[in-house]
Image (cartoon, rainbow, N blue to C red):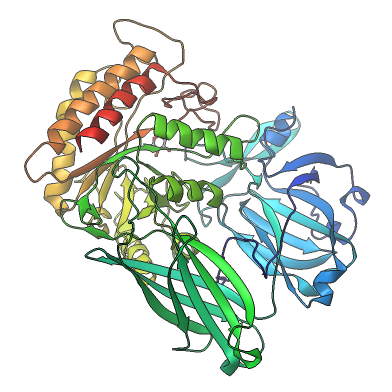
Length: 615
Ligand code: GCB
């Protein structure tokens, strides 16, 4: 089921991209009908029942005024029509459909024929559809989306029945603390490739003195004579000036080319505020050639932006280009009013502006992979990413779940392997690692990651304490989430310095690895002022932060410090499932859900800018 390449669809001289974003037709189905059995995909959705307009990309949950749709459990249907030009057939192009993310599971039909199936939200999937399209006329695409979570989905959930006056009702239970938004969350693209096409590009970089070295592995697919396929790669700097080029003829195995280029005086990829030119990117141009038609006969061209940098880690630090980094970061969510988890480029751009304004240099993609468009910004602006797979709050460890968890990491790494911004893989958030079964489970998960990518360190955002945990031993970096003076000892900010420092020291003394705080914070109702500081007020959030800052400073200023960073929970307020501890959602943001600052944002900014200049 694991796809080969999942390159982002990009136009080039040989590739066309057509967006299928826009208003689709939509209907939620209920427990009593099975639209797949009733073949709703065989004709227009409006033939089998009423439809409503639904934007793509977006979560569907908050688009209407219906509670039933917000809380829907099970399948919903999407449909739209589109045209495909006759010229695509005349030119014998391959045509592909690609979804950036459908949460959680998707069946896709085109013109009534099944073309794709994918389980796991937050990750892209694609399928060639050349044969099912009608060229020079209208086509229909139908998608059935199922949001049901079970003990063997990533993340886990369970179904429950509640009794109502109208009989039993199925509800979804889950323990993770964000709303289980669903729908077609990211863009849908049709794109073309030539018959013989570049399937995947894998980059690794190294630095020797002032020289940058870029290693590449290019795979291709297609049907013409293997002996006539050639490959050429060129590297261009940020101004488009060529800096290296290499013809590749050394096929080390079928369908792949490997090689490397050297760039003298390379400009390295640096984090934001660590260098005057952070996030420096080169463009790699890959040309697949048909040598039978001459040395320069180009079949396919794909361009991939890359950054040159090294990552190393020791028992006390994480080094980028040989310099230790300190994370000034955040936990975040893809979340906003109305569109839920749907991609919104205005929001994405605003968030990066806020991140830079506040002096942050990093965040964790808590608790699932973020949109590729969001990751592009991180590459461009020098924002360091802890890239997290959707394994949140795992409680029941089973072989079936393990397989799916590994699949989610395979797909995540396949998607993000070339990104300079991705510094650490996070294999899960807050699994119940007090269970002995978590030991074998996470040993296996980490081994799996290492077989795909051993050039980045692995972490896990842990919630169990260091003496009640079986999984920390397998990690390269020890990350923990801790809510001193919030869930533990609410109101008692005077415990923070002692407890936080003691815990960080214990993690380090137990496993001898670098330590990072991936969550701390306090829910804060914007505009609530209570002095002296009282929980939920803006003053309390500021006070809680201040006490943490003191603890962090003690840890990082020690000789041979093992403490590598702080990530506050959360960048912005976000929606959760309904609970008596939540007021319209989780309010631990330093920004509101509308991205306006609470007092804590101003306070945090002072610290992050100060740290940025000091380090
Ligand atoms: C956590 C979770 C995060 C929650 C947060 C909270 O430990 O990792 O998903 O939102 O606590 O605020 O409760």
